[in-house]
Image (cartoon, rainbow, N blue to C red; front, side, top):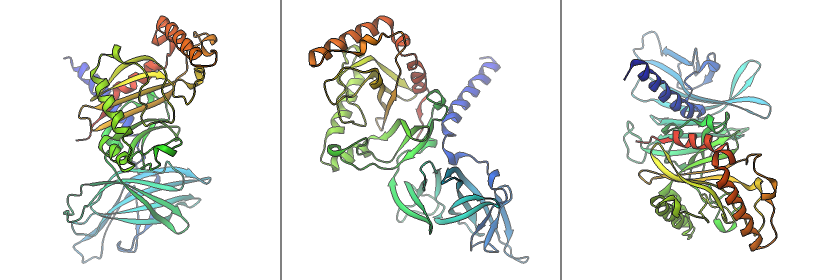
Length: 397
């Protein structure tokens, strides 16, 4: 292989990794916004830490052989109630083997960033994720210690949520976490320039009275414009356990169907498909059904809809759905994205007579027309979505 080929390959690998992993606010090592930050900390020599370029170091006294040090490990910046706000994790040591972590919530004032609340996280916990994507809360992914685990080697993965109040940071909830955003790689800009990976907390509502949500464990999601969920990556075992606790086998059945479908020839696959996470309604037709590989997994993708009644297919209902599993069957990858049909598709296809017969006739006409013009001409945006899926990799060791 020529040297320039190797250089190009390394650059592309770096770009794909960065485009997804850097989407998590906390991965930025640049602490320049806080270069002159002053943080209260009673363990520090003067009861405070005055950072320069995100770092601080000082001996306790001239005669002391030990020194205190502190560094900003992670930070996230957002806006809330008309002001810029931030969360920072400070790591510090007091001269021994301990490495302590403290979470601060800051508000930007004319005099610079001012701490409004803080909370201690413990000794030698490992910070993996930090976000302020939801107003009034700080989301922190970390690995902490189980009971009787040595301080050197924590293994308990959690997502902690802290509410921001007038009294400071208040612990709101702790969820078991299986996957962190920095354990995934993808080219998220193919979906949307604003797309980024975030960790979402557990959803607990039951299927039988659900609205837009259903029981889902804490997971990693791809968010567009800070609110629209384009993709979820869910631990399968945790997902099944949640539904068993609800005494509902729905997801267990759907996952087994998906496993069987992935072994079949694509020509044997036809709607209705199980849409995961489940939605109230049924998938009554599907276009351009195909098997789509990601870096270390496989799934089924198609254009279709979910409906609650027998009504004509409307183009505003059309979405691209994807359900896949990684090679180990540990993670479920699901997508649901609105897709716009090409102007080449005539408006007459979106009308039908009332009733089942009218709907069946319309679906037949849509399928015949779409197969005639082909996927790329019918839905030009699908190529970009499939390129995104091809870039996806779950890198958890």
